[in-house]
Length: 148
Image (cartoon, rainbow, N blue to C red; front, side, top):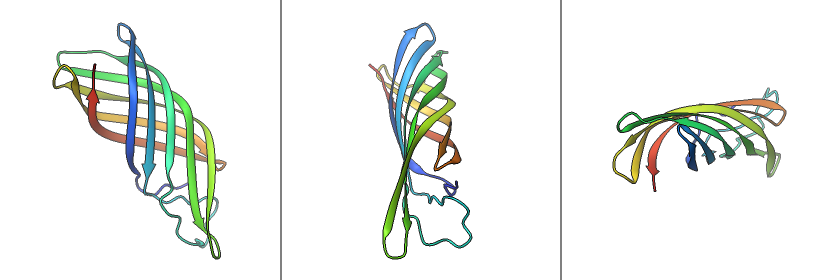
């Protein structure tokens, strides 16, 4: 399965400290913009338009703090949902699939204030089997982290 060169999207989640450096996290991601073409494509039947990919994952997270810098690592399990829209003879036909997903990731947060961190980098790898084909994705993102 090909997702083109990249997806653009969003991510939202929550981290819960458990004990010391161990915690748990939950995350929801959405990616858009690349094309999906399933199966062996000899002559594409038409454009496949803005196929969304959604993940809902969670798992353990290990994080430690050194001054204002907090590196972390996590392991994720959950589900991936994909909708591919392909052009048929005279219609746009949506095809969906939902499957188990698993992956690992890590990143670095930088403390700005007592309630705001900047996520300097967040790199995540996800593996799923969608439409009976392997989907391996790596995401790289940055963003703001609100703390309480």
